[in-house]
Amino acid sequence: MITHYQSLPPHELYKLLWASRRDITRVESILREYFGKPVVVLNAARTGLYLTLAAKGFKRTDEVLVPPYMSKCVLNTITECAVPTLHVSPATKAILLVHQFGYPQNMDKVMALARTHNLLVIEDSAASFGSTYRGQRVGSFGDAAIFTFPKAFQTILGGCLVTKDKEILDFAHAYLRKQDTFVWRCVSTLALLPPVFDTSTVWPWVRRIANHLLTVSYSQFIYFPNPNERVCHLFPKTLDEFLCQIEIRKRNLAIFKSYFAGTPAYPKSMEDNSDIVPFFIPYFTDYDQLAYLIRALAEQGIESALYHFDVHRNMFAPRYAPSLIVPCHQGISKAQMHRICATLVRTSSTAPFPRSSAYGRATTLL
Image (cartoon, rainbow, N blue to C red; front, side, top):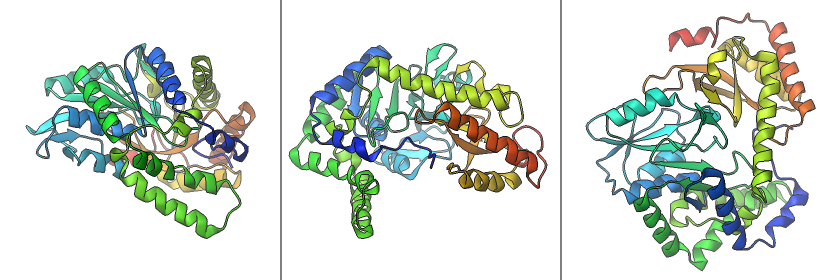
């Protein structure tokens, strides 16, 4: 099965057994060299969001502008310090600017409006390792940026906070030292159990217990923010290896574009002023065709789903279009990527519903 994430092969799980704290130092060193600015490695990207808001003294009467597709865990993280909102008001103090699927926001427009409203800018670059806008790396436009590891690498968990803001950095380091206790390190390890059991031959009730433990620990991530050394052990070993994995994603995007670039399925405007390293690739079509295509891909062992993508790439003036999300991670070979694209071409040409204009007929209602 070709899935959204690059899964960890069972024979690789042994790497989790002899990890050390030195792996955390190694990951920080690679990321500092890559970003050219201070990096704090964390248990998850959303912990960086909490640390940024807490460091800046946000209160429950302060609002954070978010897009309407944010996950529950991110919204819950914001509510620890502030209130998420969909509209700018006098109480709005920050914007969580989301680069969806690794496709940068229209930074010229978004940053201008953010500065007009005097908002603290936090770039949610969770799925955007390697993407650039007008030659500038995503995550370097705002006051702080957060990235997540498993959306780019085989790390199961983990993320980082990238910022030059000394107030945020000092608060984050102090918070990590305070929370770095034996008990919380044990709790953080619970989150590693489900993937271990999912790739092992165990009784179903064991997997259920592991998933319950994950739910409990995941909901409390901000209270054990320190990165797990076993997770960091799975991170690319060198900067060259890190960059190589990014290039494979770009190669898979290039293959996809050789089939669909400039068509209604993938208009040229998708990459205006940007160099994309995608988490997923959106394939645009009508609602009527989506279920048909998803089923056809599943029959070929390819996991996909319906998602809505902001084709304006502008949180202040979004336009959401229905799309199929196409996996493109570095575990997908050239042959497999061609098979995914060929399946889409073959299925769309034989689907019982005709294709409409770019972004699909349903988007005219948005």
